[in-house]
Length: 457
Image 1 (cartoon, rainbow, N blue to C red):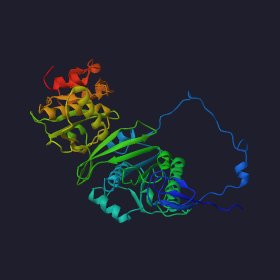
Image 2: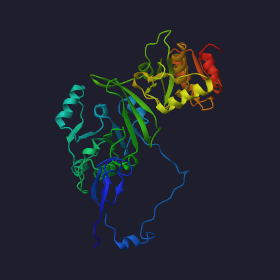
Image 3: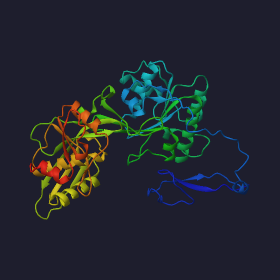
Image 4: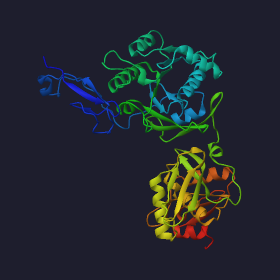
């Protein structure tokens, strides 16, 4: 009989090594390699030809008729929006976020609303006792909801319990890192245990038509802890974002096999739990007054939802010889450096002897490249001490050549700006054909835009 081989698996990234070493060669983390037993492969199995011996599978054409999957509403419109319309029967959803951000609160609220609507819901916690979950439900005003609670960490016990009788419409596992499968050696939370437990739970959900939700821990850099294959196994990956110092929370769809990605749901954390924010633009816009320099409103786009945010800049002149700082909150620091370089090289503005601070109000994180023109407007306004018109929004992408390029979904951005009372938009010249109710000012190059900001054109 072949001797079982040993392998060492990184608990941070899932990389496999044939020997132990202090640092993982893939993710560069220290002391993350844990010994696991590898599967035994006999010489006959290694040399055996896989052609033949299997069962024939049915191949279908792309033009075959497809039925859209039925959706199960959670009773929370913002959660349904991020999911693409609600949970799908037999689907697996992974939700991750920082500790204390509100993952368990959101799922408990959704479970209570679905149970109150007559659906069978099971909530299994591996981190809290059932009484602790029940006390939190009472604080949220959900104590009377008919949710079935359990505190367990054994995957076999959970599946044995749920297999007797009618399967639940929704199964919440909080969290997958606490689950343990007796088919695999290792402590809960290791790569092998997370992978094996997830596989068993997902198989149950697919076979019985249960919508499965797995809560996942995150690492210090914000990515979901455990093997990367976990994100490939599930149908939907949601990321719950936000700062504890801010009341808002954003639920972002990173992957969705049944809907679009980059959709967001916006929530506000209050004493009664998480409440929906129907108009997120009003949440991220500060009270604006005439004459304030260094502030520009940017219509960001998250999936199909436009969100207006305020970009703030501060430029501080330094004494000769001092080293200037560049501080960015809510935007990419590398992209700020690029915009500053284009402003200096193409427009003749000097930021080399000044400290530059850039902030997105409300703690919002902007990833849209269309924010380039709004950032440039805030920087020029702060440098020249000339305010951006209070009734204007700005967006567009800046090229290294100084060209202002068009971006996608202009009508959606115009419509959201007009809805909140803005009257004009500063945009690339290629986007001046359809502004809706807004007056449009188009710019082909960044030089033209700077001349406009400085009153020279």
